[in-house]
Length: 306
Ligand code: NAP
Image (cartoon, rainbow, N blue to C red):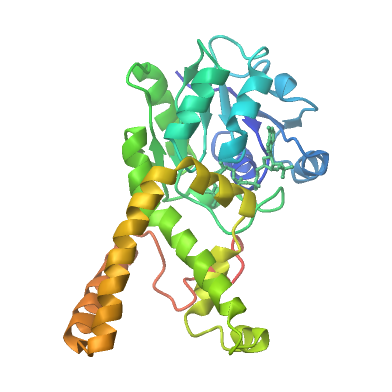
């Protein structure tokens, strides 16, 4: 089973990148797309993010065999409801949302009787909107599928093939496990970045000018993460609340231990901790998930701003 007609709902960073990747890496497939924002639809047509930009979600999915919802997690239920009446019975519905249990629940309600296999490509940048997408976004990145227990294995295999064709490595996981893993690898780091950047700009003893001027000292990389889309991240924290709160509790305990080491002058503890984290960075680079160059190789990629 291969997908020949792919409908993409939401034409921002993720939707646009999927559309461009299908064009480049799956030339046998035809794409349609829809976005709630008319300006995004216009820009999507200008950039050719999908072959046909439709004026309604229903029109976009009418002939589809694969529908991918690429809207913020909090908008999945509404997007599902908009396509429900027009969705062909045989079509597979998937998504790219950053939390998975909430999306599965929302789509089960919005699309009863339809096959839904949620997915999360672990790939992105801090940019959003119709100008942000690029075809190579998924190359060498993981895409996690969270099929329900009764999912059709042929559809799981077809969705796996689809993501592999776009350049991703596919992993299958239970939705609850996905949400716990991503809480620690993605959601918590974003929360920390949002906190640090907010704290620094609120400090009365440090001026805004100094924060910007001396940002190379570690702060700059946090500002990149903290520039991520506010709607998307609001929805991630609201929908992955339990796992994020659990990881935050663990993080607070570890932070308190480091705080104590600093207070009592326990250099060995600090050194051991920092040596361990340096080794983790090394293994991320060895596994090809980041770049060893000082600016993370960003200035060499047309796809990401330094
Ligand atoms: P984005 O660039 O903001 O694009 C989302 C688009 O969906 C926006 O144009 C938005 O329009 C539109 N939209 C909202 N509700 C809609 C609806 N009911 N029907 C049709 N279009 C609708 O966001 P993104 O970064 O592509 O994120 C999309 C999804 O991917 C999210 O679920 C996010 O969790 C997931 N994801 C993101 C990343 C990342 O790094 N950004 C990585 C992996 C997964 P308006 O602006 O008018 O609301």
